[in-house]
Amino acid sequence: MATSDQESLTVNDVNLFDPQVQQCPFDAYRVLRDEAPVYQCPATGMYVISRFDDVKRVLTDPVTFTNQTARLNANAKPSERQQKVNDLFKSEGWLPAPTLAGRDDPNHKQMRAMFNDAFRPKKIQAMDPEVHDLAYSLIDDFIDDGHCEFVSQFAVPLPLVIIGRQMGADPKDIWKIKDWTNAFFHRISMMLAEEDELGTVRKEIEAQHYFQPIFERLREQPNDTLLSELVNSVIEEWGRPLNDNELHAEMMADTFVGGSETSTNALSAGVKLLIENPNVWDKLKSNPDRYMKNFCEEVLRLESPVQSLMRATAVDVEIAGTQIPANSLINVRYAAANRDERKFDNPDEINLERKGAGGHMAFGSGVHHCLGAPLARRELHWSFTALTEKIDEMRFADGKNDFTYHPHYLLRSLKQLHIEFTPATST
Image (cartoon, rainbow, N blue to C red; front, top):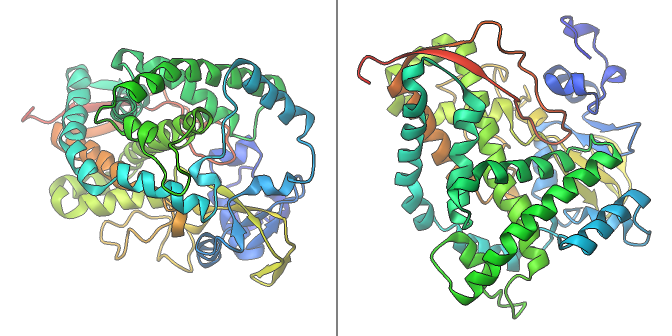
C-alpha cells in the first residue's frame, strides 16, 4: 500500500502485515484513527487500537487488558508450529519462561521490584560517562573518512556494547551477540515462515549456551554487573532468584533486544530525520543544551522504535464504541497514538519547541512502562550531542540508500543508512 493521494486510502486498504505498508505505515495509521480506531484485523481477528487516549487506557488498566496473552490458549494445545518451537528449545536449550513484560500483578510487581533495583537511577547515572565516551569514540573511528554506514558503525555498537558490558559479555563477541539478537528480533516479527522461525530458534539456543556458563560463574562469584544482580537477587515473595529458563528469556527479550535494538533504531531514525530536516539540524547545532532533550523525544514519538505490542481482554469491554469480547487479542499501536492529531499539534513534524514533548507512548505507559527508558534517553542524548559537536553538515550518500526497513509487525528497524558528512573544523 503506497499512495501519494492520502484521501484515496480507506480502511479496506489497510494491511499492517504487508511489508510494503510497514515501510511507511503512517498513512495507514491515520486512516485507522479516523475511520476505525478499534479495527478488527480480518487475517487474525485481533483488535488494533490506534488513538492516543484509547492506547493509554489499555496500557494503564492491566486488570482489564492483561499482558498474559498466552492465557488465550490456556485451554487449548499449542499449534503444531508452536509445539515444534517449544520442543526444539527443550531438547537443545532452555524453553524461555514468561518475561517480565509478559506477566501481570502480583507476579509482575514482585519480579519488577528486582529490575527496579538493578536499574536504579544511581546505577544509570554511573553509566553516563561510559555512554558519553563510547559515543565520541565511535564517531572518532570514522570521522576522518567523511562517510559511514551509520547503522553498523554507530547505531548498533553503541547500545549493544553498553548493555553487553552489563550482561557480562566479552566485547569481542559483539557481532556474534548481534547475530543472536537479530534472530530473536526476526522470530517475534510475525512475518516468518515456519522453517525460518525454527532457524531463529537455533540461533537463540546458541546464545543460551554462551550465557549459561556466565550465569553459573556469577552464582559462584558475583560482581557489580546488572546480570549478576539478575542472577543472584532473591525475589522475596518467590523465595528464590530467577531460574535458568527465566534468565534466558530475560536475556533476549528485556535486556539485549529491549536494551539495544530499540535504541539502535531510534539512533538511525534520528539521523535520517536530521538529514531530511536541515532546518532542525541547524537549530539543534545552534543550541544543543536548549533543544537536545526535545529532539530526542520527538525522534521517539515520530518513529516509535516499538510500533506496537500485545494485550488480551480479561472481560468484555467497549472501546470507542466497539464491543470487544473477553479473551480477545489486542494490538496496541504506540506508533499510531504518537501521531494522533487529537493529542499532538502537527504530529508529523519535528517541533523542537513542543511543550510536553515527553508525553508520547514510545516507552509505553502504566505499570509496564519501559524499564530501560532512562538509559535509552542517555544513549540518544550523548549520541546526538556528539554528532552536533563533531559534524558540521550531513547528507545521504548518493545512490547507496534504499531506506528499507526490516519486515516486522511490532518493531521499526532501518536496515542501513549510508551518510556523508563534513567534520566540524574544531575536530
